[in-house]
Length: 568
Image (cartoon, rainbow, N blue to C red; front, side, top):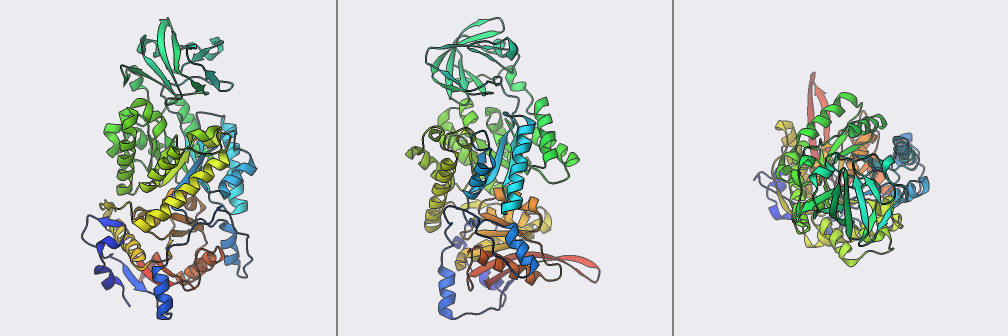
C-alpha cells in the first residue's frame, strides 16, 4: 500500500523538520512493506522510544555467521552506539599510545583530531597509522581530522609549560628562539613590537594568561603578568587596547601560511578525512584549499572552517556556504571578541549550519577544569547540555584529552551528559527550527524531500530506527539535517564514507559490501547486523531509505524509495 497519501495528511508538528516549503510529500516512491503482525504488537512498536545507548560504548564480541558476506559485515562493524551528538578528542602526549586510543574509541570517540601546531610530521603519521590499525582490527570507524596552525601571532616552541605568577615580567621578542633565555619568548610575527604599545594587554591562549605591556626596547616587548596561569608551547597571542582587540598589520597575515601548506601536503599524503582551517576570515581561502585538495588528493577530504577570529564574523554566511563544515573555536574567539558575545555567536553559527545541512562542531573549554581535576564543574556540565540542546553535530575536547590528567574521564563525562540531554530532548521535543531547501537541481531536491518525508514518517510512527544505504554519504546528511528522534543507521560500501559520516549528528555508519543483484538481500543483511549488535529486534518498526540506480532499455535512472517495514 502506498504511504504517500498518509504522509500528505500528517500534521507538520509531528517531526523535527518544520520546513519553509509547504510540500510535505516526497517526490519518490514511498512504499510500505507487506510484513504484518498482530495489532497489539504493531501498536507497541509504533510508540516505543529509540534504543538507549549502552554505557560504556564498546564493540560487542564478534559472532560468527555462516554466509561469508554476513561474517564480513560483523568484522567491519565493531561498535554499537546510538548517541546522536558526535565526540571529537584531540590526540596528544596524554593519550597517544595504542591502549589509550583504543579506550577512547571504545568510550565514544568518533573523530580523532591532530593539532598541527604541535608535534612533528613523523609523530602525526604514527598516530594516524595507529588509529587505522585499530579501525581495521577492531571494526571501529574513527575518522581523522588534522587542524592547521594558521598564521595568527603565537609564541615559539617551549620545552614544557611555564607557570606565570602574578607580577612576574616576561619578554616577547621577534628575535629567534635561539637568542631567548630565561623569561623570554620568541614571537612569530615580525611587526609585533611595532603594533603594541605600553598599556596594551597580551592575552595568551584565549585567556589562560594575561599580561600588561610595560615597556618596549627595540624588538623586545616587556610585559607583566596580571592574570596568572600556564603558558604552553606555541600559544596563541592576542593584544588588546582599551578593551578592544588590536587589528593592525597582523590582520593582513595570510590565512594559510607556508608551514600550513606543508602540513596540508602531509595531510593529503596520509589520507585524512577532514582538514580544519584555522583563523578563517572569508570564503576565499576555503575555496583555494578545496581546489588544492581536489587537484592532489586521490580521495575526498572535507574542509572544516574554524570561526575563531573577529574578522570572520561579518562573513559567516559565505564561510558556511563555502565550507564542508564549521567549527566554533570558542577559546581564540573569546580572546578577540567580548566574552559575553560568544554564546550568541555560537548559537547563530550552529543555526546557520543546521539550516545549510553542514556539520557544526563546538570546541574549547568544554571541560577546562578536567585538565587537572577528575570531575567537572556543574557550570561545565550545563555548558555541554546547552550545546547538545542546540543540536550541534559534534563537541570537541582539546587539551582535556591531549595533555590533561584525565583524558578518558573527560570523554566519559562528555558522552554521559550528551546521552542524557538527548534523551530528555526527545521527550520534550526541543530544538526544532525551519529548514530552507538546499538541494542542488531536481536530483538534489528529490533526495532532500525524500529524506524529510522519511524523518517525518519515522517520528510520526515512533520507528525504532531509520536505515539508509549510501555510497557518497549525501542521503544520510539530508536525514541528519532533519534531526529525527530515531537513530540513523547508514550502510555504505566505502570505509572513507563511513569515517566521514562519523561527524554527522545522529548517524551511526556501518560498512557493508552491497549485494550486486538484490537490494532486498542488502536490507536483510543490514537487519541481521543490527540484530547482532542489539540495535533492533525482530518485529521492530523501521523506516528504510534507499536509492537504487537501474537501467531500463539502455536508459539509466534512479529509483528512490522510503519503505516502512518490520525488522526481520
